[in-house]
Length: 293
Image (cartoon, rainbow, N blue to C red; front, side, top):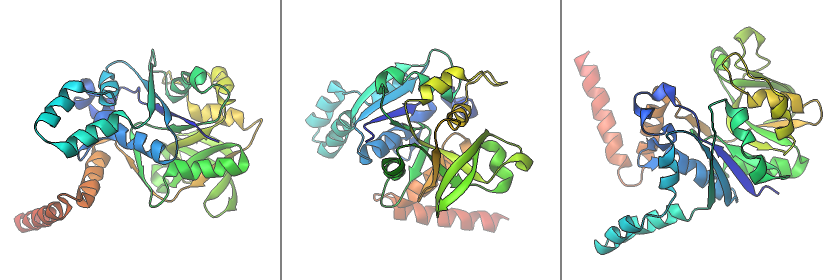
C-alpha cells in the first residue's frame, strides 16, 4: 500500500527566466491555482495524505502557500467572503505536508535521495512538481498505485510522444504485457532519435520501491553534473522488474513557456466561472487576426 508521496520542486526554472528568478516555477498559476497545488491535489485524490515536498533556494513561497494565514483568513471573514475563506482553509489542510531543501541542484535522482529518511522502508509515489496530468475518472497516481498493488514493483507513468521529440525525454523500451502496460527492459535519458527504443516517454509520475535509494548512491553525475533518476532505475532493473503504464490522461508540462500558455488556455476554457466568455473572446481574437492578414 502506498501511503507517502514525494514531490520534487527544487529546480532553478531556467526556461522561465526572468519570471522564475524570484518566484518558483512550481508557483506559476494554471488560471488561478499554482501548479504545485494541482500536483498535491492529485496525490490527495489518489488517497495519499503524507507528502514530502523537496524544495531548494528561493522556494520559500511553496511552503508559505500551504501554510495557514491567520491575517488573511481574518480579513476574508470580516468582509464576508466565505467561499474564499473556505478555499484558503482547504489549501492549508489538504494533507500532512513536510518540506526538505535540496542543498545543491544535482538532478532528480539527487532530489529523490533526500526522501530516504522520510519514506523509510516503504514504497512511495513521486510526482514532479512542474507537471500536471489531467486524467478523466481516476488520477494517474492512483492508476499507478493500482498496478503496484498487483505486481509489488516499480511502476512508471508513460506517454507516447512524436518520434522527433524523443530526445527531450527519458524513454523506455520493453515488452508489452497488455494494452497500455509494458514490462520495462531499458531506460535512456534523452536519447538521439536513432537510438531511442520506443516513443514511450517518462511522464513525471512514479511508484518507487525503497531499493531505489541504494541505486541512486551508486550513480555518478552525468556531463551536466546531475544524478539522473532514470539511470538509477536502469540499475534497479538488474535486480527486480519494473513496469510502465501508458496512462489514461493528458500531461501538461509547464516547464516551458509555450506549453504553459497552452495549458492556461485549455484550463481557462474549462473554467466554470468564465470558460464560455473566454471561448468567445478567443474566437473573436482569432477572427480579428485572420482579418488583419
